[in-house]
Amino acid sequence: MAAIDAVLDDAGLKNARVREFVHRYAELTGAERIEVVNASDDARLIQEALDAGELLPAGEGRYYSRSHPKDTARSEERTVVATNNPADKGVYNNWRPAQEMRPLLEERMRGKSAGKTMYVVPYLMAPPGSPLEPYAAGVELTDTRTVVLHMIRMARVGVDHINDLADQDSFVRAVHVTGDLENLGHGTEDDQRYFVTVADERTILHYGSSYGGNALLGKIAHGLRQAAYDGWASGEFLAEQFMLLGITDKQTGRTYHICGGFPSASGKTNLAMMLAPDALGDRYHVSFYGDDIAWLRVDPEDGRVYGINPEFGAFGVAKDTNEVTNPTAVDAIAEGTGTIFTNVAYNEDTGEVWWEGKTPRPPADPTGWRDWAGQLISERPADAKDAPWAHPNSRFTTTLANVPNIAEDYENPKGVPIDGIIFGGRTRDREPLIRAITDLAEGVYDGLTLGAEATFAAEGTEGVLRYDPMSMRPFMSYPEGRYAAHWLKVIGAATNQPIFAHVNWFQRGEDGRFLWPGYRDNLRPLLWLMRLRDGEVTGRQTPVGVVPTEDELELEGVDITPEDLETILSIDTVRWRQEMAYREEHLSAFQGLPEEIWEAHRRVAAALDEQ
Ligand code: GDP
Ligand code: PGA
Ligand code: MN
Ligand code: MN
Image 1 (tube, helix red, strand yellow):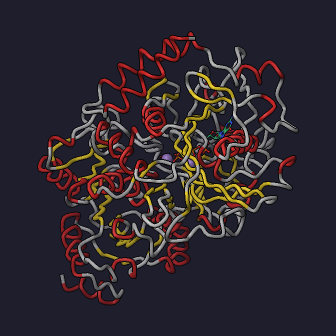
Image 2 (cartoon, protein in one colour; image 1 turned 120 degrees about the vertical axis):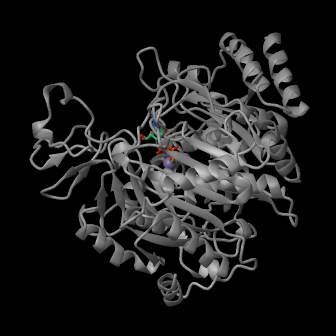
Image 3 (tube, protein in one colour; image 1 turned 180 degrees about the horizontal axis):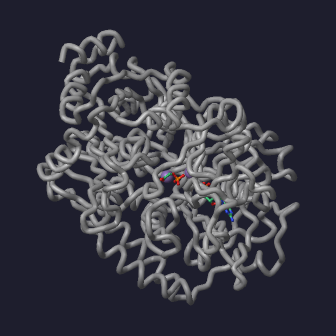
């Protein structure tokens, strides 16, 4: 007891509620010692992690880590939202009673940090001074040093964020205990892992992983699940799995801001970091605000929707990141950036890293190369010779400030006014390149019926088509009907409404190739959307929204055949009519879905029937 107080005193941690929290879980987890973390501790912690072999050097100021081979993605099945109110049960939130889950998790965590350090990581999920700051403070307790190093990159970390709280109790209590990763019964009936957000007690208890969003509790658990619940409970804001970018037209001096949701590993990071294609670079500049989370509120002064990125860094998919697809990401993870790579391939002689799509072929000389699981490439068994070198969900972690096109005003506490909200995902057919929606209820309806192929970012489901409302399915914390109503209420309060759109970069031909070149060319449909909002183009009205005509898209320098272009700009009404029946079933599961959403559904269905 006295020893803990001495450490907290020494670290200048004054918040009495935080101190109680630290005491309680230090005792419960049996940690041998505690250490309070500030961002300025990074260099020392990196050195300790290198000395301990938890990180390996990957060039000047870059690091490599492998997670346990059973622990490489989020586990949606083991993720639970708990509250004290059974009415909070939704379709996707895996609701369980708080009075059941809290003791269960605390029992699993008991004594499991014996012999380890418990790091106390105070953090803020917002630019300092934001109107949403009251929801942004948290303290993560973790028994894993690499988790701390990720937190320092992904969130603003330091004791000041919790000492100065107006209400000393208004911080999220987040506890991460790794457990014995080898023996947690992954995927069996006796799976020991649990990732629980006790939303109405603002407490996060995660046991059984040290990977990504399972372990960095500021990001998904607080930034999405807890914040979405807080935004709804307070009536004040939305917390969404959205990227956020700006497009400046240098000719007019105007900047547009667009945010939007695609399921994990479906293109948010690449879109937000994109450079304008060469042919458009003289006129347009794209700036990066955020790649995974946006919090949205309406400013009462000007009646506009404002978006902030609560994060401080990016946790990006490595696969296919290269100079052509994403040159800004390549710069953001270059030497000297402090980047941590997770589960890519690694050369133990040279410290080089490699992943599929970094170069067209793997390094010709396999000397020193090991795959993501640590197997020497030169000694792979015959049946594993063709397996990827990097895990498909391998990642890089870097701070926002390392991204060369980071927006000048990315830390503006107020956020930026939102002109457009887009939804998208991996859809091999049906969804055109872009279809714009000008009506709020139809826009929300479109988000709720987002259907896409699941990806490697979650365990076990890759490639399966499934509905993923607003790309929030894994992060939904309260019932979907109320979620829809909350969207209508928050965005409906804006006097200047953003335009909505559904986008798809992933339509495929019969031979399986992508029809649209994607990446930097994705700026083109977004420019069209902003022109449509400004009344400069009219597009072509279809039953499912407004689609660009070929001559309205600036296509100079785009590598696409006229046939493929026609395909991605047309609506397959037969296929769409079929889809409407699935949507009806999907939406019917949502209790209390607002009548405006059903009306939107019926309007679209009727328009399709008239075709
Ligand atoms: P996020 O997880 O939603 O942020 O998605 P990322 O931006 O990290 O992209 C996930 C994967 O999709 C990466 O392997 C990207 O290279 C790939 N990707 C992203 N944008 C495009 C695109 O426009 N076209 C194609 N074909 N692939 C893309
Ligand atoms: P992603 O972020 O959306 O960029 O994949 C990580 C995650 O959602 O797990
Ligand atoms: Mn995400
Ligand atoms: Mn991403």
